[in-house]
Image (cartoon, rainbow, N blue to C red):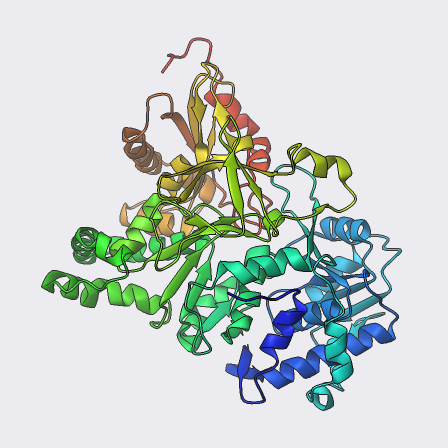
Length: 596
C-alpha cells in the first residue's frame, strides 16, 4: 500500500529509478524499444515546458485522442504536472462525438495519435476554445504541431530539476485531475470529474496485496481512455513494472509472444475470445475435441486447488497440463502469473473454465465514478463468482431494492457542468448510487448480479437479470454477443450476434457453402444449432427467465457500429433500437401466446 497524495507522486515514483530502469517499451519496426525511468522524466518535462510556454495554467483542459503508446502517459503526466486537467477520448469515437466532448470540456489543446484522428478532428465542427493541436505520427498536418518536434529538448531534461519537482508538489488532492466521459450506455455522455485525491486513493489501496514488483511486465492494450486501464498503469508504474504498449487489439497475440508478460489485465470479452479460439480449434478435429473435453474434466476435479493458488500434483493433471493447459498458457506468452479481469462481469462459466485449465482470474469491480475499483479478488482472498472484497477505504451498503451504494475517498466529485445529474446519483446522506444490483456474503465477498436499469420486468411482475443469462450464452464459441429482451412482455426472448469466424468454420464442416452472413444465419442447420445453445441454457433457468424465442442476427456487434462500448459492454438501448423489427416479431402474437 502506498501513501501518495496526488498522481504527481506516481510520476516521481516512476522516474526516480535511474537511466537503466526500463519503465516502458513499444514496438517499432519489429523491435521493442525501451524507455528508461530517466527518459520518461525528460520527455514529461519537455512537454510540460511546451505547455507552459503556450500559456496553459492550472485547470486548463488538455484532450488526448490516441491509442495506447508511450506518448499517451507522457502527455498525461505533463498536463497534470502543471495542474492541467486531461480529457481522454476513445480513438474509436466519431467526429461528432469528438466535437461534442471537446466543446463540452473546453479543451485548449488536443494531442492526437495519427492521420485518422487528425481527419476526425478536422471534421468535428467548430471548436472555438481549441488553441493547439499536436500529432504524434510524423507527417504534414496543417495548423498542427509535431509531437516529435516538441520532444527536441527531452534529452537534456533527463537530469532532475528542483524547480520542476517542487512544482509537482504544489498540486493538492482536491485539485481536478481528469474529466472522463462515460461511454453513454444509458444516454448522453457525461464528463466524470475525478480529482488527484480520488484517483490516488484508489492506487494507494487497490493493488498492495497482488505482489507486483520491478521483475514484472504487463502489456498495456486496454484503452487508456478507460479508467480501468489507466488506473492499472498508474499502479504498475509505482511498483516498477515494465509497461509494453500495444496500440491495436489485433497485435496483441504477437505482442504476448514477444513481451511474455507476467501480468495480464483484460476485459471479459478478451478472455471469452481466447476461450472461443481454443474451443473452435479443437472442434475442427474429433480427436482434439475429445482430448480437450477429457482435460477439462480433469481440471474441474482440481478446480479448488487452482483457486487456492496451488498446482495439482496428480498424474492425470500433469498429462492434461502437458497436452492442453500449457498450450493455453502459452497463448498468454507463457510467463503470466497474475490474471485480472475488470470493466464488465466475467461470468461464472468463463471463470470456471479458466480455473479448470489452471488459470485463476482475479475479478474486480468498479465504475468510472469510483476511480474505479470498489472491490477486487486477491491471491490471499479469492472467491470465484464474486468481485472480491471491498477496499478497506470504501464503505458499501444496499438500498431497499438491492442497489449497491458506496462511500469513500475514491468517489467522484460530480459530472462536468451537470449539477442535476450529479445530484441524482447521490443519496441525501451522501452515498453514491452505483446503479448495480448486488449482495455481500457472510465472508464479505461482493457479488454484482446486474445493472438496475437493465433489469427486465415481465408483464407478470417477474424481474429478470439479463447479464448472467447472456454470459451463459457467450460461453459457447459460436456466440459473440447476446441481448435478452422482454421488458413489459409476458416472456423473455434473445437476440444473438454470432462469432462469425467460428460459425463459418462450423458451417464448412456441416457442408453449408455460403459466406454471406444474411444467408448463413437463415440456414436451417445454423438456426437449429443456435436454438440448441439457447435450449441448453434454458435448462438451468427458472421458467419465467427462460428464452421462449430467439433470432440470430447477420451482424457481429462491435464498438465501431455503436452496439458495444469501448470496454465491450452491450449498449442495450442501441441494440433494441437497431433490431426493433425483430423484437416486434417476437411479440407479434403475444395476445394469444402461451403464458410460459
